[in-house]
Length: 124
Image (tube, rainbow, N blue to C red; front, side):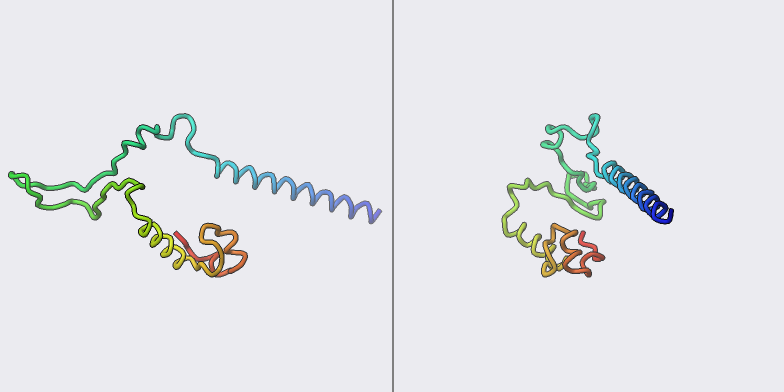
């Protein structure tokens, strides 16, 4: 009787574990599912002609710039116009912040296994 009870408890725990794992997988799938469904994403044409909002400008009556009414100034630059040195500098800065010696900067899961200090650091 004791052996049968132990087997029943193990099976019960296995079922609970399987159901919990399935629930976690369903939640992860729901959170990671692409959000662009049902026409919610912009069209390719809209993305090709996208212009980010610019700072509001105050002009005098002759059309000369008096002031910009925004904390930042944005200038649209096509990705092809960015020199390789600039993208290389961006990647180097990112690696320096995230600790490249502890794994790949684009693989946080791998980094957290090989170097626990990067698991808690914010590499944004």
